[in-house]
Image (cartoon, rainbow, N blue to C red; front, side, top):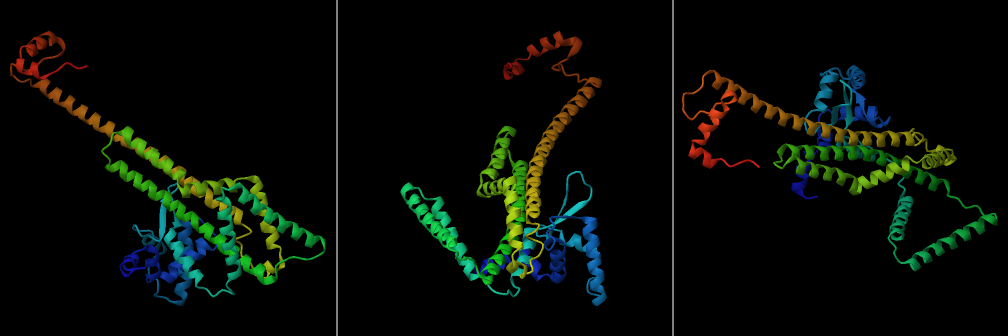
Length: 374
């Protein structure tokens, strides 16, 4: 966190959103229409209508506060490289759609983190750290004897717990511990959904870099395609790509989906959890994850298809240039045919082929410069 780095960071869209004059309007509106209902994208007409309603209510309180139209505000918020909204056209649609940028979502999440919490779940966080440490060591353990010893220790603990339960001992968390873990669960679930916009953005950045490489490359098309397809493969082979595919595989498993639903329903039915007044995030978590993951999949597939069309366009442009050169040659030939030069070295074609051949062979200077074609 050096001084110069922070000065440069002020140009980051997250910082710019927090510092803009209309930040209260922008962030509250974004939270209400995107974050709170976990909406991935909205059509321009729908988003404009929602913003018009918001502006109407705010102008009843402060008449001269927001003079622009809803459409003008959306245009401003989606304009430029550091935009707060991403404006794009979905497949087979003439109406643009809007989605939050990862930077805007980060600013909203940071502001939400400033809210005064009922309590900080330090115990559950520490236990999570312990569990992650143990998981890392277990999955990287290569000594069979050491792994067996760890499993035997776990087996001893499980047998001891089974014995206590058989003797009538009740083992459970107190209400404070249940609430603490539930709040941490909600926070983790929100963070997981936030990650998907960043994953999408990473795919789009890779696509832009690929297009720039195509536009500026001097390589032959075959070599260029090898580079491009290699980069596409690198997406799936990267840590992020592998993690997303593993997530998608788990989520698309019917058994995992059923287990996920059962666990959520049982947790939400607990009296301690109901006293926390949970929102609609967890009951619809499976559908939110499916929607977010499917959108990432569609984005990735769409980028590959757009890249294919882009390459087709490049081929068409090359063919167009070749045809243009041919047409220029044809026009020049017609012009020469109408007014042939009187130079004795001019070569005639068609019905005077033999004459042209003889004239050509009589020119030693030209004959020495031209080699036969293989």
